[in-house]
Length: 283
Image (tube, rainbow, N blue to C red; front, side, top):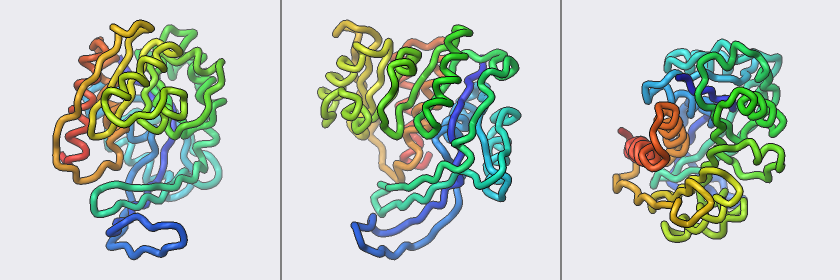
């Protein structure tokens, strides 16, 4: 089975500094470097690294950034024949990482605003799961989700960055994955620890068939149904953090790979947590 990832591709410019700048502050960095990115691209690479077929639906610009991004997909073994090259600039971001490994970023969507082609029958050959994120316009997500539903393909939405979802789109989501901020913005309440993450998963589980709420170093909580006994929590593995950048995408990729291979939600969450812990520790 193949995982289809419909989503963003960004040329990331990574900047390292002792601390994140405050408002009106010009912080002095120590180094910068380019990195393959975009939530969609990172998740596609993570799926491929988990040993499962990964197919990307996306768009890049006709620029050096776009050529860099396509080469990154190919090097990771991600099928890129449904990634269009469009006139104009590719998506990009600037991310600043502090000495503790925390970061803040700004993205420019560029070509990601022009992702299309979800109605191509060839795109869906052998696909067992669709991954979506919120770095594409909802119209593109809705189109892909509708095509998935028509073919009986489950839809996993990583609702990041947080934004309101239309009822039409929410009704097509089979697995919702959110972090603490996103869970709160979607009405799950404040997430401070595993207990509150579990409460958020149960609340959001009334709207979505399966919900996973990640709570950083605390771990995660999940709901596999509308009743309280269908929810569970998993503490995080304790590792030395090198950088948290990309941890969520590593989690999503490993989660999708496990699910498409038939793992139950709890087993898939455990595999995803292990992949995320390895990622943040630099493994």
